[in-house]
Amino acid sequence: MIRPQDVLPTVLEAAPAVAACLPVDDDEERLPYVDAAYVAAYLVDCARRGRAAEVDALLGVIEQLLVDGTAEVRELAAIGYLESAQGAVERGELPEAALVDRLGPASAQAWRDLARFWSAN
Image: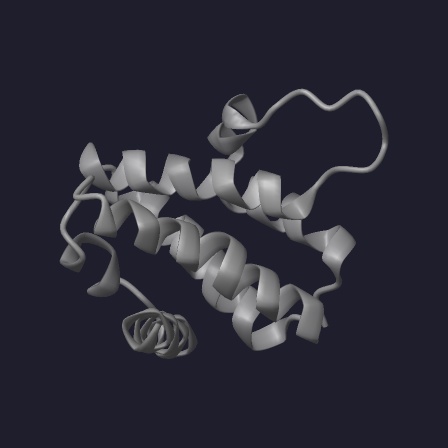
């Protein structure tokens, strides 16, 4: 079971270059949703640049968080990571297929659930 404190180390293990994008936080408690927004922005940038290996690594981590995470981690994966990436798609920063076609089953379901939620509101 992936716990909240395991999320960022798991992300950094899969995609070490993400570390350069994260804000420097001198106190000991990081803000997971802030980190997720930075990671999602990095994911979108990698997708725009055609860096498939990094995109796949990050999407693989998001899938892992959704499948193996605690309820809190699953929510962070969906709302923090995927919803942030969806926002970039909605703003026209990249085509939806650049990410959706690479999602695992749990991530694809979460993506659809988020899209359905926002289309209803």
